[in-house]
Structure formats: C-alpha cells, structure tokens
Length: 322
Ligand code: PEP
Ligand code: MG
Picture (cartoon, rainbow, N blue to C red):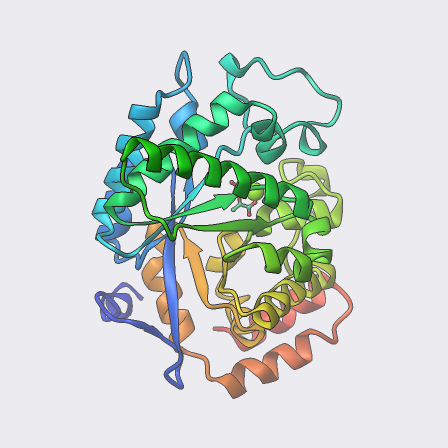
C-alpha cells in the first residue's frame, strides 16, 4: 500500500480516463500548511481559522492574522488557499468571545451569524485576509451559510474593506473570490440561488450530514444516523454539485467524506472537482481517484442511488471498492 502510494507523489490527480481533479488539504494553522505542501497537497481547500482564535487569552490581532494568511499564501506559491472565516459556536467555543450559553448551540448564534453582528471582529479578519491576498492566491469562504442575504452581507463587507484599502494605497487581490460552504439543508435546497451569488462552493459533509439527519455529529447514541451514506445526504450532495455545474462555478468538498474511498466513485460521478482532505490522506485520495473512469463510476452511482438505506449503500460500495 505505502509502496503504491509513493508512486503518486508529485503527480497530477487524474481519473483512469484522464480527467483532471484536484486534491487540496484541510489545515488549522501555518505549521499544517507546511505539512500540506510536503504531503503533496495541490492547494488548501479549508483553512479552519478558528484555531488561530482558540487556546488564546484574546483574539489574534489583524497583524497576527495577516502574517498567518500571508505565510499560507506564500507556502502555496500561487496555488489556491481557501481561508474560511471564523466558524465559532456549535462545538467550537472561544472563552473570551463570551458567547451566551444556548439551549441548542448547533442551531444557534454561530459562524457567519455571529460574525455578521460582531463587526469589528469580522472586519479585522476580512482586512487581514484581503491584505494577505496580495501575496498569493487566497480565496474567502463563508461557513454555515443558510441564506442568500448572508452571502450578500459578507460580500458588501469585503467590498467596503477593499475600498478602504484602496484609499490607503494598500495592496490586495482585486479579483479575490468569495465562496461558501454548503453545509446546511437550507443552503442545499437553495443551492441554485446561492450559486448566483458565490464564486465557488465547498460542501461541508460533516455539518451537512448532522443537519440533514438531525443527528448531532458528536453524540454516539445517534451515530447510527450520522452517515454520509444515507440516501438523504447523497441526494443532497448530488443536488449541490448539479446546482454549481448549472451555474458554472467550481465545486469542492472539505468534509471528511471527501477522503472516504467508498464515496469517491459517487463524488466523481456527481462531478465533484476538488477534494479537500487531511494532509495525510492526499496520496491515498489521489490513488483512489485514479481507479475510476466515467463509466465505472457511473455504473456504481446508478446502482447506489436506487438503494433505500445507508447500510445497503455502504455494503454495495464495499463490494465495489477494494
Ligand atoms: C464540515 O462541516 O464538513 C466542515 C468541513 O467543517 P467543520 O468540520 O470545521 O465544521
Ligand atoms: Mg462545518
């Protein structure tokens, strides 16, 4: 196995019939970015910036954030680095933000919802990202989107900060893209509308699964429901990818499902273009992708998408993927 994988170092990611795909990495800090580059990641598909905010007595300054984003941009030297804006709340508490205790934190005041009403916190982060965008190929990604209005509000902020930088003569990437995570059922259902407002999609299957199945991703008692193999989740993923394609925007996946060998034929058949995985899974994912042709993936997907239960889906996939 290790021997086989070594053969994929430094190679482009292609399917068995030579369609090019991308394997990016999920990271939480600059050190991870170095590892991601060493492990042959072709870009960063998810920089979880909340790690810059956690385990600290106070929020990182604009300068501190700027340095981290700039370094990630430079390490990837022109390849895409997707910075996800602060995804606080739910399971990710940050003591100094003094978030109120909630009955249902996963359904609460978190991520983009929290950021849009904490102007200084959010604008500081966006300014740091914009400034760092002068040093590489950075993209902005908004977590936990549920409405078109949220995307518009973030884009307004980006525009406003860009205008301020312009006025001060500070450099930034004038074409910086603003994309979204599709990880709520609402976002999936209106993915056609969101695609008109977004430069790209990245599917967050960890949250998409928990919200679609109404099953807390950290609760072992409902773990039997929390499966990306469930027909409901698979239909949602297929729909999101279709909406992106119809709108002509790129679509990736940064949830754990992107690295699951069982799901790769389905994701290929649906038309997923970018797989963002942990640095240690880059080569294995590239290898799995290389095994499938359009036809072989389509024949698996056709059978799977007719099945009625997650168990049946998983069983069939196991029989098709060695
Ligand atoms: C996801 O929800 O799938 C995701 C990639 O983000 P996180 O795991 O950080 O919520
Ligand atoms: Mg998420």
